[in-house]
Image (cartoon, rainbow, N blue to C red; front, side, top):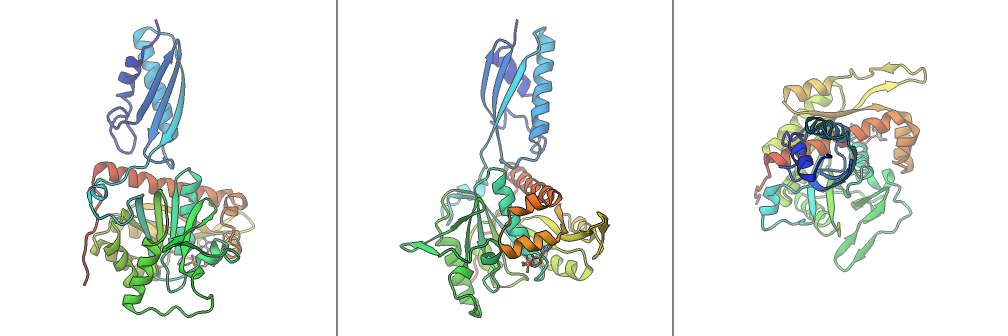
Length: 366
Ligand code: ADP
């Protein structure tokens, strides 16, 4: 006698999503079960295509079904699992009547205490890494004082496009991107008074035709100025990521950036340590700036460290050339760091969304 579909469901009730810590059936992740003789076909819907624990879920399912077969004295089944993914929008946002970006599930700000730590680099590569996993991703270059995306994404020869009042984002490297750098002459000094900065950012964020997105990454200007305030006021954010380099001086400013988000009621999803170390031609790792500084800062602030990124000359080169996808080919190690960072971020967002514990600021500023 072989297993029936109801036996499979019972077995799946014993398998927890390792991060959300509830079983797959309760979470509604089991979308289809088909049993034909000893062949079992399952469709499991993950909470993000960048799920870091897909392999663990697969092996836990296989073990649970094997165990069920053994207990029932049934022959060992052949289990085929198809994974799909549906990113969930936080309840608070769905409940809010006036969501200005209803088709965007998660808006994630990327900030830094100071300039030059690699905030734009991390923003763009994180967006691309999420898209590589199969998510629909947008990138908003909110660094309206020093937009880097025209260069980093290689937009120089692409004309900006609009339809009526809506800006059409650039469809590049698997993501949708918009930047003020393509809407003003390249050598124009970008001097914004507070209200102008607010207006420019608001237009970029809300007058872009993003379509349906799972994640919108917003590259903020460095520091604690007008734009983060505008963003927190304008859009219910899922959370923020703070980029930092290992030196003490960078950490002091990063701590201020973390405090700023917390003061605005924005959940800090994690920190990223960029320029953690340098790998020489001899293959040795050199801790130029004292690796690990961000990890201790994150621990002291009780925030997860989402990942680290070493200094790599190819990474700088690909930034300058506007060929971000080449990072995965040029340095598999860099690619792994980026994929892992994206998975950790997506995993944390899923956990917080399902726990219903995302703070979503509704501040009003006059
Ligand atoms: P920020 O946005 O914080 O001002 P950027 O992302 O513009 O910083 O990065 C500043 C410069 O450092 C860029 O030229 C970028 O290519 C380079 N860079 C950033 N991170 C790395 C890295 N891990 N390895 C090599 N170069 C990097």
